[in-house]
Amino acid sequence: MLGESDFTHMSSLGVTIMGQPFDHLMYHFVLPYSNWEAGKICFSESFESLAEGLQEALWELGGVPAMHQTDSLSAAVSNLSEKREFTRRYVALLEHYGRGGRKIQPRKANENGDVEQRHYRFKMAVDQ
Image (tube, rainbow, N blue to C red; front, side, top):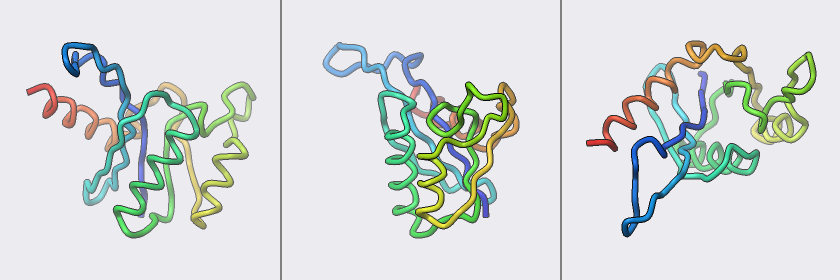
C-alpha cells in the first residue's frame, strides 16, 4: 500500500478570517487506491509540518502504508546535492514507522498524481 503526500498553497482562494487574509498551506495525505485522505492546515513546508501532518494522518488512518511518496520538497530531500537523497530527519521519520519512502522527479507533479488531483478537488470544494 502506498501513501502520497504533498503541500498545497491555499492563498489563491482568498480565505479570510474576520476580513483578514488567511495565508496558509494544506498538508494533504492520500491513499491512491481508495482515495482515503487527511489534511492539516500549516504555514510552511517545513520538516515539522511534514512530520506532524504525516503523523496525524497515520493516527487517523489507524495504520501505516508500506511506502510513503512525496515530491522533492526540501523537508524530505536534500535538493542541494546532485544525488537528491532523503534528509537524515526524513529517513529517521520513515524508520520510526518502519517504512520506506520514495520521491518523484523534480518538476514532475504528474508522478504524484493522486494527491495533486485531490488538491484540485479539495480547493474546488473550499472555493464554493
